[in-house]
Length: 253
Length: 200
Image 1 (tube, each protein chain N blue to C red):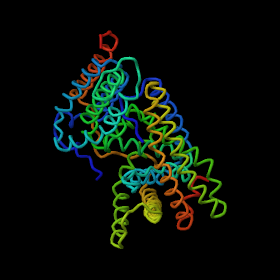
Image 2 (cartoon, one colour):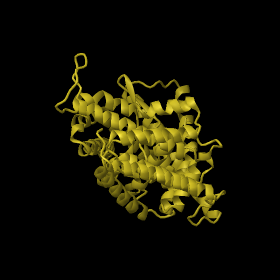
Image 3 (cartoon, one colour):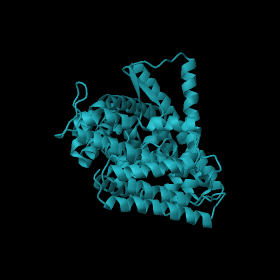
Image 4 (tube, each protein chain N blue to C red):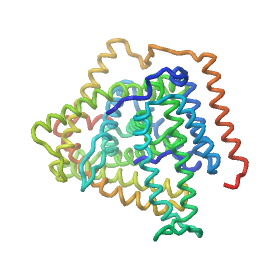
């Protein structure tokens, strides 16, 4: 259930230094998140879609991921046109959705999917470990990046631990229902997972102290940004600048 | 319990980012390297909680358990929750980089507040412990839902009714969070009470 399906590959995007990708993803998403014109959001959507296409994600996985994340967009589409209010409305069967509500819904869909595409193209193509070290190099507090790297490291173990308990419950005939018993069982399963992870933390901590841990983690591969990376960074910043510049020109939309 | 990218406006995004940065730095300051391993493990466990689906009515909801983390870690819950959200963004693309500040504060703020306020109840009688656990889960979820509705409303007043729907749809989730947190707390007090005295 937890994996990084897009991080394996050998495209241009996979080879780039995580630091460069982090900066690129951050600038493009900030510009897109702040834009308020449909045209600029649309251009951003197209550019990020091209980036995503170039990173060659597996189509089926990509489709599934896009669907999952767009549930909220769907919710916006269902609710916003009917509740937004405003003077102009269009007649649609027996409903009267407001034009302004539809406009906002379109804008939100373009923006959130544009940012999602940029994220999938730039960040999902790196492993979390590399991103964590990249963040530390970019100035994220060492303790925070340590927390990130270590939670990531232990995530899979804890998830397996929980699944093991869950399997044991199932073998004893536990079927989830709407009952207090179900809630209590889930709580105890989770509580036991907590106890186990607490004990594991203690053991890992002791093991690390024994190996001379002083608060810093040394990554095995320490990529240095190459010329191609700087060129890539330049391209990403250019895209952000272009989108930001377009936001200042007033378009009819 | 995530606001997606592309919905909020600049002032709300900036406000969330500032508040989360403050909360996280306080949390990190109170955290020394002896406890950092425990916090990372709890952060990972918190992430796993969001994968647990509990049946309710005809559907199911996933757990959040921010209140529980607040009870266990106090201020330390802030960075732990931010890290868990960060991992969710990386793994599932839920939320995002720019709204991380807002989402972080929506979940971590109430969690820390409830944790700090209700912690003392856990030293009382069994009844008090149960009430403390329930309130931590219920109130942190309640406040989170209110903060989420506020974030939407402050971005665009036209979101008022959407925010209302969001708030109402979280009511059953609050009850479940309360019940589950209550059971987990009483379980931990019986099985491994040291976990709950971690931040004292």
